[in-house]
Length: 218
Image 1 (cartoon, helix red, strand yellow):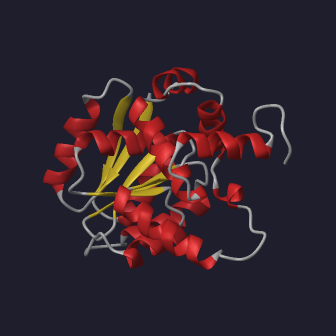
Image 2: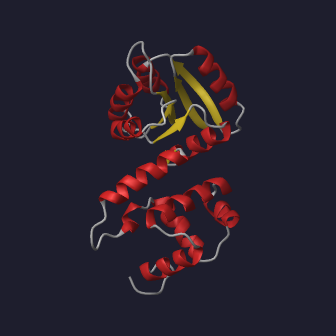
């Protein structure tokens, strides 16, 4: 069971999120708060797995400040930023503050639940448009000779890459890693973006070169 705390200054938003998330079999909203300081106190008391943090809260401590302070006190708690701002500035600031990911308030409910599961398992989650912008900028800054983009992959993305190269389907990979097919597809999309590859044969050749199949040369 994933224990969640909601931090948002709108009571109606918290109510809707609570109903939505409590309807998911493996999720439970264990606490609520209307501003950052209250959210920090609730998290310290209830020790949630995930804090769903609103970015803009005009009364009390804002989401970015609360995220930064909370991560210092509960480093193992994942914080997922909920925002209406599809903007690079907010994205980078959220990551710098220690957030594990960002989800737009306009996102469909299945994206929100997948994001919660992703950050709870230790992965990062960014909504699709933010992922592309972030990676484009990051890769642009790393265009230097000899740089190995394999270093950009998360541990889970490396697992997915290896299983893809070994011939497993998305469904089989999901079953092996105990994640949904949509999550597998998201990991695959992200790792292909990071490696700047477009086809499965390219991934297989790359994995062989890296020695991920148990043979081949690095």
